[in-house]
Length: 53
Image 1 (tube, rainbow, N blue to C red):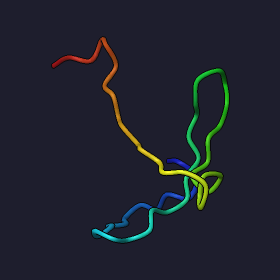
Image 2 (image 1 turned 180 degrees about the horizontal axis):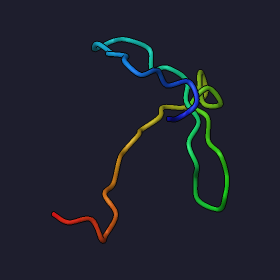
Image 3 (image 1 turned 30 degrees about the vertical axis):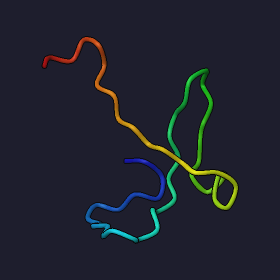
């Protein structure tokens, strides 16, 4: 489970996203709070190429 995630949490439109850390390209870690107040953040989940359709 990603850092900061809870087992059950529901966000509503307008809620602030909880902080989380994900693995990024090149063995880096990216934390949402690093961008807070600096940039817009776009999060997209892309299924891997070998994932069945």
